[in-house]
Length: 249
Ligand code: PEP
Image 1 (tube, rainbow, N blue to C red):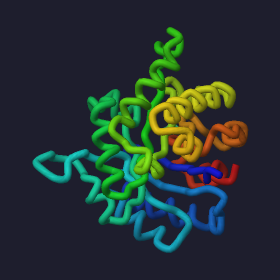
Image 2 (image 1 turned 45 degrees about the vertical axis):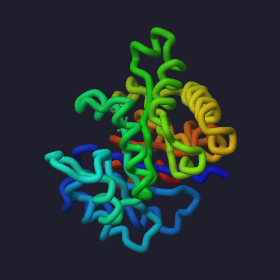
Image 3 (image 1 turned 90 degrees about the vertical axis):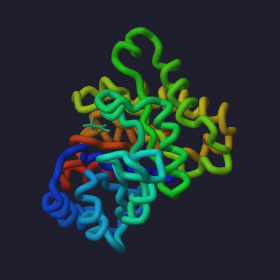
Image 4 (image 1 turned 60 degrees about the horizontal axis):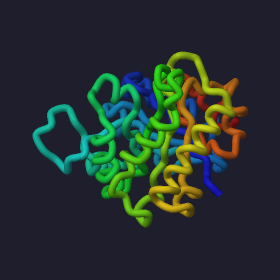
């Protein structure tokens, strides 16, 4: 059984005080909820505050990005070790906004994946096609290529913590959602590619999240698909009530 993971991607929103207020309001709404793993991914400046506020609860905390190097002269960056030692347990890698605005490539995502695993972070690797790629009939090729390149050099024995998020770029922050059937079809493609690269048993245990305008109103239909093992939620995760409703789909 794959335990669903519901992760909040707060992007560049919330000061530490606002993040702390969110946690105060959110924790009672999900107290005792253990059907799903719940993770909040604030910006780096709120990580310490959020980690301290969720201590001892059923909510984990992750970063939104990291550098692949151990350490070095990389102004503005955060390493995997820094995330781990502060108490983060997971990290989002290769989000389409990082790919679009910050030159993230399949190659850097792969390097980051290796570094995240080394430091025992659960990596949430984002892949997904653009609108032009979908309309051009290239969705399957794009998903297979991105999955393969992200997983390069990963041994089956090391793959257990990996989570993949299928995030069609045209659905992120746009209010357009993939239908549950479209998402499930994409997840099947990704799982079959993982099976081809790492074997059937790794693929069957690997969680594949859906992300792209998940809201309280559409969460149930999406998350009831057997192929969908959770959600990566942007806009709707900024409000504690709305994110709690998604968690409790
Ligand atoms: C995201 O940022 O990963 C995301 C899916 O955003 P939204 O839910 O706002 O589409």
